[in-house]
Amino acid sequence: MGKAREVQLQIMGIVILYVCVVLQCNEFKEENSGELDAGHQSTKPQIKGHIWWIKMGIYSLFVLSGQTVATLLGRLYFDKGGNSKWMSAFVQLAGFPLILPFYCILPPKNSTIDSVDTDRPPALTFAFLYVSLGILMAGMCLLYSYGTSNLPVSTFSLICASQLGFNAFFSFFLNAQKFTFFITNSLVLLTISSALLVFQPDDASDSKKISKGKYIIGFLCTLFASAGYALMLSLTQFAFKKIIKRNTMRAMMDLIIYQSIVATCLALAGLFASGDWKVLKKEMEEYELGKVSYLMTLIWIAAGWDVFTLGAVGLIFDVSSLFSNVISTLGLPIVPVLAVVFFHDKMDGVKVVAMLLAIWGFVSYMYQHYLDDSKSKAERANATQVSQASTGEEVQI
Image (tube, rainbow, N blue to C red; front, side, top):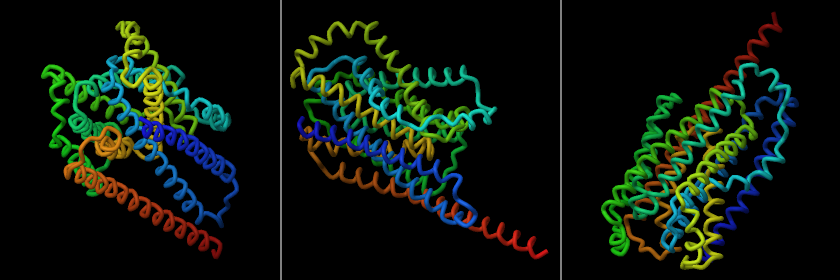
């Protein structure tokens, strides 16, 4: 448990570092947006490229670290005596207040831009968007809680990998996602990587604890949760393009906070309506690791999922929902591997192969983005040369 707490503290350090870097990037863009003249246009794409890759690295680290720590602690909660599905869902959603201090220090909204943008939908449309995504998020977290409590880790990871296929389906119709050879290769490799975990035999003790009925319930809940998560990612990308229409950090934070408020309120209402709140005191007293560990486990589950959400929405904001899901799927084989360290699970060749395939799939996807970035820079350079040549001809005339 001590090692798990060290990992959790490292996540909070990453949060602070991330916000500082992003804020500095935003300030840099605002301060220099009007200072770059025609003579500096050739260096501007290069500067933006560096900032983009730094942010993508931080977002990806957030997704992988947050998902891994929160999943491991979620398993710890149920293994050591936790039993409330609504409490598990609640802590997955209740971590958003941790980012409120950073939200308050963001640069203020640009009133000039807001006044010029007359195409923005009314406030009622935004309210409907946040409420809809919040309801979908709350339902998804509850279904994942049932899956986590009723399935072995390897089976749970296998079913979660299906979210990549669901996301590709939804992205194709909602966001006109294009599929190249390297993207398709990445999807196949990442899916196979997680699917291999089904051949990893679970401990006999775990198998005996799970009845056939609970297994079926866990399977169906996790499958529907994966589809819901994929739909939410695609809808988030669609909302940024068609409704929000603002490429700012504040717009991203607004979406995270408001949908989290709705989802947290729904989970809290479910906790009281189901009567689970009545047994929480007894659950805490009978928790095998003690009362303090019980509270710390729940708190750090909330922090881990909040870090994950921040990174996932950031990847959707700057890239696409499919890319965000690729990074999330990359982390699925990491959980069984780290379980070797924290839960003393056995490591075998299947887990090693799964990890290598996941890394291969991730590199394939990133290589496609490298090709797209190189192509974009070449097109901008050609456009600049053509523009300069036409300007020179006009001057001669």
